[in-house]
Amino acid sequence: MATKELRVLRHKYRTAYTAYMSCVHALSDAGENGDRPPNDLLEAEAEALSALMAARGSFLAAILRDSGGHG
Image 1 (cartoon, rainbow, N blue to C red):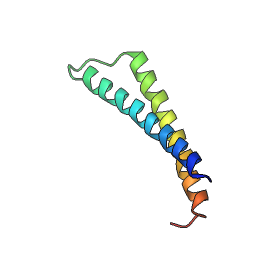
Image 2: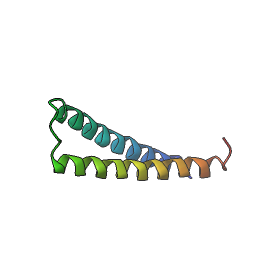
Image 3: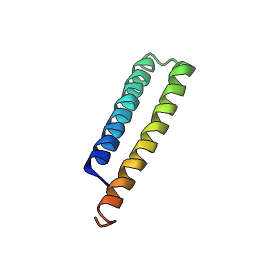
Image 4: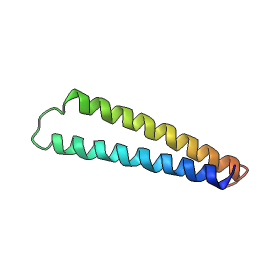
């Protein structure tokens, strides 16, 4: 796989990670007073986690293909 493609996948992975961590911080802040976080925040966190896992899988698969499966 071309280096440019790996850079794009790496960028997508980092972007997804940043979005997920934003949700983590928001959930943590929302839960400080012991209240249940709002449903929209819980849904956003679940979607962000799903996007992160998808980006991670694509990025790691590309790395393995690029390296010929050797670690």
